[in-house]
Length: 93
Image 1 (cartoon, rainbow, N blue to C red):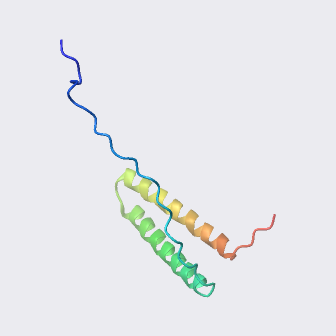
Image 2 (cartoon, one colour):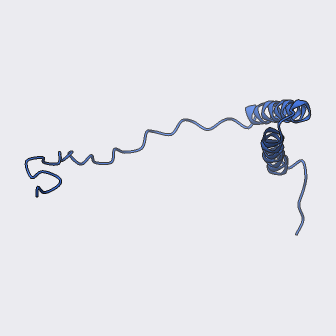
């Protein structure tokens, strides 16, 4: 009876890689460009939500409708989060 794995096969040992320092951070956006970027993101999210909802309505396959519905909900949650972060809605506790 032979042993498995054969003794003649040796595992190849890879050298350990040391962690490299993180790349330098890019300069942050100016406050003037932030509203434009947020408006663009909100506009893109609105378009994506509309497209996914249309695909959900057109689809005849039940699993696809469920997937499109889930994606629509997630995109809507992201949109609401962006609106709250922008300060459009003020939350008072």
